[in-house]
Image (cartoon, rainbow, N blue to C red):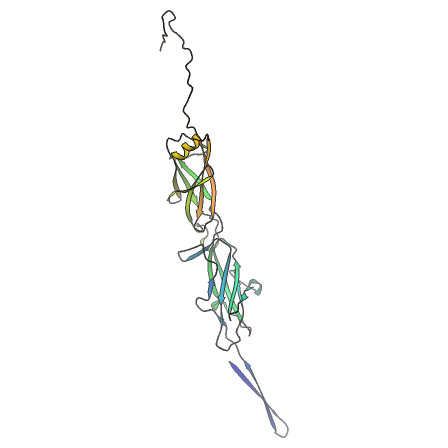
Length: 289
């Protein structure tokens, strides 16, 4: 809005002179329209209205407008990840682009799980958007590999240590698996992005396609007799059995669960020592059962 001020000077003879001065008045707060905040980093997973990222750094593009046409224009957009920003030092400037009112920046989020970022805008006249008309964005961060893995049973029995096998039968393994759970914020105490799959590791080799069947947090998979027999034929007597746990944003964790002690060689070179004869007076051997 343009404001014109006219000044009139009158001398002692009642002669008058005038001068006018015009200036623009901008007392409108900058605003954010719907859809003005977008991320330019693609989420690793979008599910249940949540965008999950496997990085703490998320790039943003933000657009603000300054009140009415003809106002002074947006001079700065700032962001904060503080829940209760109390000073200007809590806010960080974004970078202007060639487009009016458009700013970009990469934001580092501090916590696993839910994070909220707030944006505010300033115009050239010094007006600053307020809490009620600032823009916000919520993202979900999961950079931690699933670390809650334990062996539950081997062939239906609670087990630790080594399992004896000869390759005649498969070995059924049940592992209990949970995603990283040290989550703060809105979803504290819950899983992060969640488990995608659990894959068998046999003798240090990930067995692509041999994935566990889920029942709650338990995953059941089979170590095939073919694998075990091949190891025995190759002269291996001890192999490690483990799993690779992958979550929904591609964090993964490898862990050994137990060892297979393989014995697929039948006894050989069996020799019968000389028998004790119970009746040395009779030809042949006589034994007393």
